[in-house]
Every structure is written in C-alpha cells, then in structure tokens.
Length: 415
Image (cartoon, rainbow, N blue to C red; front, top):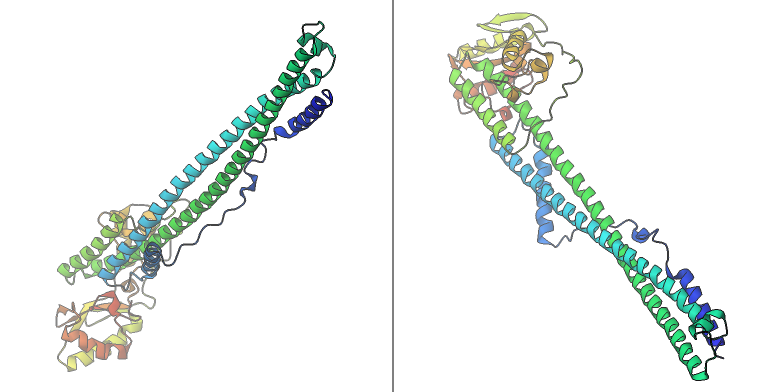
C-alpha cells in the first residue's frame, strides 16, 4: 500500500509537470480589435465638441472673397479653437496609449516571472516525485537515504512520510503557480485589448487633427486669394485714390496677419519642377478709349451709352480701366523675386511689399472700370452716384458685386 500511493502521486505529478509551463507565445493574442467608444450625446463635453466641429466646418466653407472682414475673423477663431481641441485630444490619446503599452509590458513581465518560477518548481517537483517513488521500495536510492543498512519499520515510516510530504508540497506549489499564471495571462490579455483600443483612439484623433488642419488650409487659401484680389484692386486704385488704395491694402493685410498669427495659412505651393507660365491675360479685342477710360473694345460702345445717360443727368463718368498684365509682372519681379515661381505662384503675403499675382483682375482684360463721378471715386455704397450706377449700369452689361466691398468697381461679370 505504501508503494502504491507514492507511485500514484508521482504519476499525477509528472503528468502535471508536463503541462505546468505553457509557452509564452500568444500572450495577448486574444486582444482582438478594440471598439472605440462612442461619445455620450448627453455629455456636455460632447455637445461642446459637436458645436466646435460644426462651427469649424462652416468656417471652412466660408467664401473669404465675398465675406465681411468680421466673418473672416470669426472663421479664423472657430477653426483655431477646433484645431486646439483636436491637438489636446491627440495629446491625451497618446498619453493613454503610452500608459496602456506600459501596462502590457508590466503584465507580460509578470507572466514571464511566473513561468520562470514554474520552471524551478517543475525541477523540484521531479525530484520530489523520485523521492516519493524510492521511499516506498528497496531501490539503491532508498537504501542510500537510510544509510545503506537495515532499518526498522518506524524509521521507514518517517522517511516515507517526509518524501510524500515533499511531493504534496511540490504539487501544492505547482498548482498555485498555475493559478497565478492564469491570472497573469488574463491580466496581460486585458492590457493588450486596452492597448489596441488606445492605438485606435490615437489613429482617430490623428484623423480628426488632419481634418482640422485641412479646414484651416482651405480657409487659408481663400484668405490668400482674397488678399490677392484686394491687392490687385489697390494697386489699380493707386493713381485714382491713393488714400483708399492704402486703406484697402491695409485692411486685407490685417486679415492675413491675424490668420497667420492663428496658424492658418494656405498650403505652400510646390516649388519643385519647372513652373508652367500661364498665358498673360490681356484685352481680347484690342483697346479703345472712351471719355478718357481705356478698356477692351467689346465694352466700348456699352460704356459710351452709359456716359451719355450720365451726362443727361449732369454726371461726368470717368475712371480707371485697363491695366497691363506686363506691368504687374514687372511689379512682382521686383517685390517677390525673379523666378517663374516668384512671379506667378508665390503668395502675395510672402512678397515685400505684398503684390498681387498677374491675372487676378478683370482690369488686365480691359473688362472692368473703377468709376469716378464728376472726378470723385465712388468709395461708399451710400454715395448717390452708386445708386445711379445700380439703376443704369446693368442695362449696358456692367455689374458690381457688393460682397467684394468695392463700390467703385464695375465689370462685365461683377468680379
């Protein structure tokens, strides 16, 4: 009976040893793909975030060419606020991801430590199993434990109990280690799943930030285009009304400066490769001078009729018409640089002093007139001459787009 029990215990133990130290390969394999939690629509922070997103989207859609300066300022503020929020969220998500990765490392280290301890316990358990086996018989090892001589029954019982006790202790230790390994692995799996969710969170926040920056860039390009057109008009006004010319340029420079200060600017134009120089815009039908105003021949008769109508009402219509695109090219060369990129593509705000790109004005086609009434430029929408133009100019094909904020500027398409 004494021999049967240790044999049974040894067999159980050796079977347990064979499965006691599972491979570390695959720890965390149950991580799977985490599901990013959706924001709670009732959370005030979610509502605030939704408002910021909606405002940013509206700001990005703003047509800066036709918007009031205050609207542009609000759009700049809304886009910057949205971008700051996305930057903050990304920083928080990255910190959470880093902590999750540390948790994974800590959990795996715990798994590794338990497995190392189980290796040690396995070796001890094997020795205890052999002791249990030999203590129940007359093998050489058993004899050596008894000093090689005859031993009485009480002594044999003592060694037997010691051997079986060691075996039971080894089994208990091994079982405890197996349970600890299961817990450690479960912890590692949870950490791996959390890390996966955090990584997905970072990817989403990066996408959100990219979207916010793209919206900023969209508005930045629109502001640069607005500045370009305003500069073109200001340069043309220089000879007609120097003060107004400076006011127009200063107003638009201030908007660009505020956008740049907020980190909003148009995309940098790619400087690589040869720039294909666009066709220089100019009069399509030759030039004609009507009442001192140079313009494309196609609108000469129409403006002559308008001059006649104005004269009947005691108004002398004059102004500034055609401007040479070559003159604008020369200006850009001096203010922006000598290369094709400098002349045709460099944003005007990067020139010193700022200068509009060639081809940005209807004046270069001879299809626009900055109108003077009795020698005075129409500078306000409240000017009676503006009201007269609104009534009569469309009849001859000349229009003013009030969203451009330029009461004096009349062209065939309003631009």
